[in-house]
Image (cartoon, rainbow, N blue to C red; front, side, top):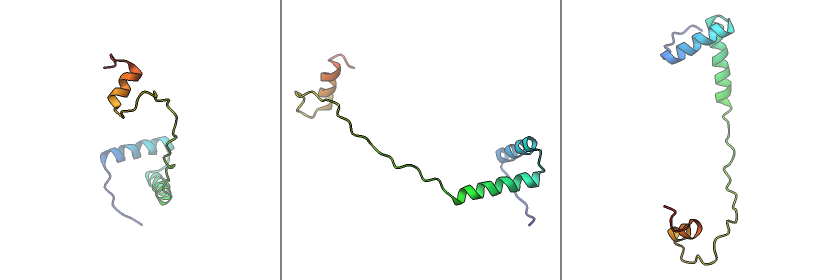
Length: 81
């Protein structure tokens, strides 16, 4: 199949680099890269589920108000700022 394709400047530069690196003709390089990209696009990568591991942090028993600034002052001292 023949077609005319307009490439962005950055894509054209990367393609030229790959042609020089591989030593293949432009046609073969374009077909190889398109084939590879289309195969990858057909199999999207599924990210691992995000998991949070709870840890005991040993809050001071005297902290009962629920005030975060008060907790920070208890843990780091009055000069924490």
